[in-house]
Length: 262
Image (cartoon, rainbow, N blue to C red; front, side, top):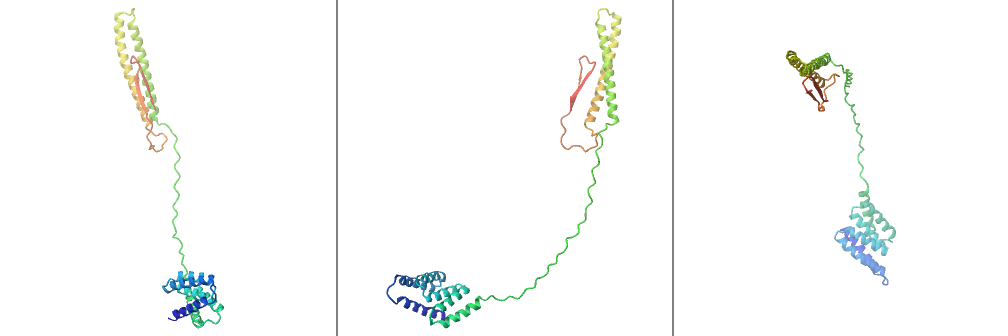
C-alpha cells in the first residue's frame, strides 16, 4: 500500500506540474503519455508503462518521471536499473515529498541486487588411472618363399612315352601306306598282294593302336599338368580360363593330330 500511495501521490504532483503554465504542445504530449502509462502500470503491464514513461520524460524531462521509470524496473525484477533511476530522481528533484519512501526502496533494491555469497568449494582431485597394460602380440611369421616350378618326373615320363608311341605309330602307319601303294600297282603278283594285304592290315592295326595309346598318354599328361600346381602355391579361387584338348586322326588312320586351347 505504501508503494501504491507513493505512486498515486507522485502522479497527482506530476499532473499538477503538467497543468501549470500556458498551454504547451510538449506539455500536452507529455501529459497524454503519462496518463497512458498510468493505465498500463495499474494493470501490471510494467514493460509497456516503462516505454510510455520514458517517452514522457523525453518529451518533458520532469524528475517525477524518473521515479516512475524506477518503479517499472523494480516491478520487472531489474533492481540494479531501478537503483539508478531512484538516485537520479533524488538528485534532480528539489525536496521531493516522498524522499523517505524512495530511500526505503533504495535499501530494498540494494539488498536484492547484492549477490548472495556462496561457500567456497574445494576442488576435488580427480584420480587418473593408467590404462591397462596390453600384451604385445608377436609379429606374424614371414610367408615362405615360393618354390620353383619344377615339373615332376611323371610329367617327363608321360611326355617321353607319348612321343615314343606317337612316333612308333607314325612310322608303322608309313610302312602300312607303302605296302598299300605296292598292293595297288599293276605289276604286283597275286601272291605278293596277299602277302602285302595281310602285312598291311596288321601294320594298320598296330599303327592305330600305337597312335591311340600315344594320344591318350599325351592327353592325360597335358590334363594332369594343367590341373597340377608345380610352383607349390595355393590354388586360385577365381575360375581358370577355359582349357580344351582335342585329338583328331589324320586321313587314313596313320597318325593323329593333337591340339587344343590352353
